[in-house]
Length: 112
Image (cartoon, rainbow, N blue to C red; front, side):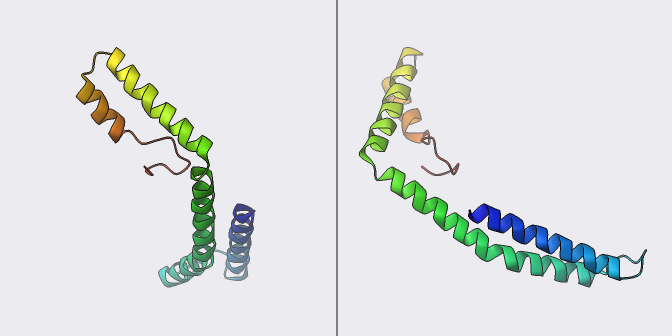
């Protein structure tokens, strides 16, 4: 739902910018200052929505992380990784270090 709002806002800004461009002289390029103003307006409109979307995504991940079945799945993932590394010939310490430093699958890459 939030993404739809963001897309609608971006499309409206694009239409407004196009209308603005059509209203000026036909071959006149916008000045760097005009481009800067349009960019600032676009970003100013998008930043609050992006913040709300990020907050909603984090809240959703936390709700999922609170579930016991999520912990069980993550534990199985880490145990299977460790066991597979041992079978591949890594020492227990190497396998443990790799397992510890391998991020769990997440909707937002980079989260451990």
